[in-house]
Image (cartoon, rainbow, N blue to C red; front, side):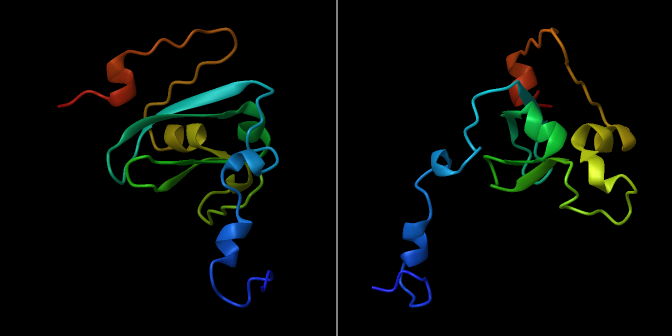
Length: 126
């Protein structure tokens, strides 16, 4: 049987891991965690996602909307997603982008406590 993937069939699917637990670094449980609560501007789904502070400060963070499956860029410290109109594209994060756009950003750092209500997580219906 052709294991190189050039012969067709579903060989490629068998080569992919069953979960991200098999991908190095994807399930890093060490280090400080950060979280974001956001509303998808594509489908209006409100959700919360968690990621490592290391990825946010030094790498790339993408989160997938559970509603429409769209990927949202949270941080790009590696310059993978160049924005020709932004001179700071090699050190981009959602906090800076939202602040620049005049949108509400609330970051909690240090030993602060983040307390959430159900309205914070799912949003208020108008």
